[in-house]
Amino acid sequence: MKNGYKKPDLKTVYYDKEIEKISSLDGKNFAITGTTSGTGFIAAKTVAKKGARVFLLNRKSNRSKKSYDLLSEFCPDADFVNIECDLQSFESVKKASQMIINECKDGLDALCNNAGVMALKDQATNDGFDIQMQTNHLSHFLLTKELIPILKKAADNKGESRVVNHSSIARFGVKKLEAKYFEKKGGNLGGNGSNMLLSAFIPQGRWTRYAQTKLANAAFTACLHEKFQNKNLNIKSMVAHPGLAVTELQNTTVKDGGMGAWITSQFMKSGQTMEDGAIGIIKCMSDSNAKSGEFYGPGKGKMDGKGPVVKFELEDFYDNKESKDLLWNKSCEAIGEDFLI
Image (cartoon, rainbow, N blue to C red):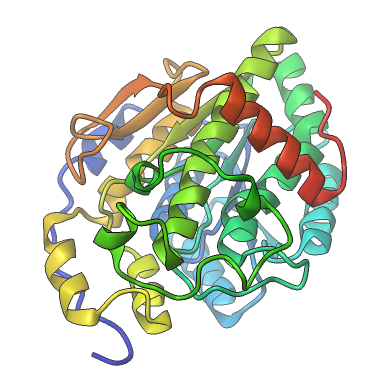
């Protein structure tokens, strides 16, 4: 299939029971990136139905307009705020941040850095960075930095606030973070090799760049957790992975040449629906028992593609001084600003 792949017909197993456990979120402000489809769409719909005001951060497109209309149809009593935010542009991220700050006079209860792209071609953003690293991590790093004041305000006024990152099983695709992937070397970071299995043994191409971004998401969580704890802030830093969730992510990757249509169709038969894949980030945003420094994922947690969501500890291969220092220093260098907490 040249233009995509045939999605498997899977049944949602765990979502409904998990959502029943969520208490009212009335009076809370949530910001979520990447809500036009997939886990972000489900997360936005879920917390809105529980009463939260939800800021939808997406690049301006027909998809963002349609998804906004669809969410409003699903949740007619909800308060959705459309915010234009192109994660391939630091300038756009800063503008979006200021709009949220202006709207959240009593603070932001949760920021969910959900949006992501997968296994795209070796190309640079206008800012000069790898398109995957800027979209998946660097712009989220900047967004979090900009919104720290209103996250602090919510923590002071309401007792806590949260930053939720979205990683992936792909974090195991590389052994450690490498500085070059955080630098202005977009378009010169390994080419367009698309062999997912080979990249786990011989670092190359699309999947290695993707794995670096997903490892960065987890390491960023570890950094924030440590810094929030050291400053005695009531801001929680958590991370989740969706397992093999069937979303538009695979379709985009197939169209870009990162995966074959037939093999993707077969591979995703062992996955789960986007509803079940969204449970991790939803729990991180809304579960009153969720603690800072926790990782949520399906099944046995670390590597399972599907199953009930469990929590586990942050892992040593990124939750260490070397990885955290590299992540923080190179990310600050990339955005051209210090991130002081």
